[in-house]
Image (cartoon, rainbow, N blue to C red; front, side, top):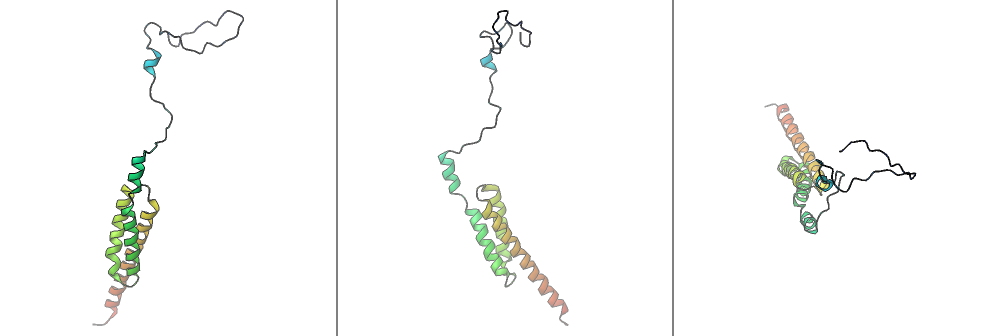
Length: 136
């Protein structure tokens, strides 16, 4: 039975009995029926079709970066870049979820989009401040 103490061999030869018996003991499961999946971590290997599908992605990240740069450039001169910057932020968040391999592009798109939004808000605050100072 499993876990049962076995007497060491009585001959003069020193040996360990570390192998399982070839035939199962009465009431014990066969060893082959107890083998399960490996417990160690096995890395996932992408197939060629998965790699080609991943290579085609990246449009959202590129669009987020382009909109972010345009929005930031326009927001330097006025509040009109806010729409493009907001679009860059939305596209960057969508790209973060769907495009795992283009991390730097969506991150730059998010950064430039947020910077453009901050500049646009600053323009709005400056204009509101200027309008309240002017005597009317």
